[in-house]
Length: 69
Image (cartoon, rainbow, N blue to C red; front, side, top):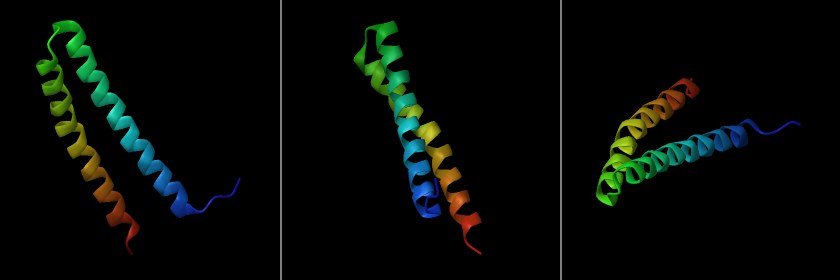
């Protein structure tokens, strides 16, 4: 199955974003489950987004730099 490289890159990027969302939501849900505190869950979710989102942003930026000649 031959696909356009641009389409593959876009799908891979969307997959990474969905994975980030899943991980962050899971972290928040686990904290709410363990503590019975929605505020703690929101803080865990936001902390996870801050840490992993920054890493993903840096990774995406490095991919763009490698793509440029």
